[in-house]
Length: 102
Image (cartoon, rainbow, N blue to C red; front, side):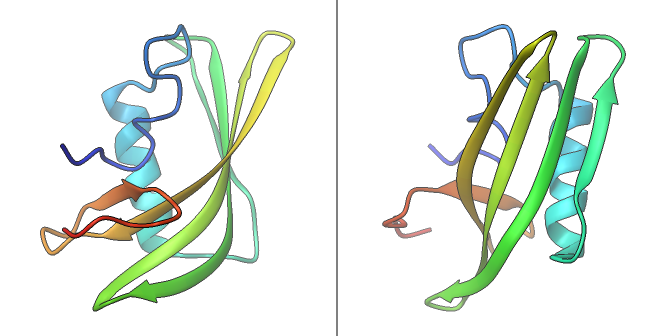
């Protein structure tokens, strides 16, 4: 099963991304700006997110990004190093360090 980029953030926990958070993640990855941090706060969940794109690369014919996702809830902060590649559908899909075939 393909996971949209960001879905792995908080799976089965109280920091899971909502659909608007996932949409925001897709927009940020599509912009591919490596020169600034992208952050937002979800008023409904009380969770803040920050994305820092580290680098771009290709896997086969797919453009990919390595990025850090920071999740802040209350006094708890978690940084997750993640990778995503742009699927032929146009959506950014999470991949492990050894990407699987799309």
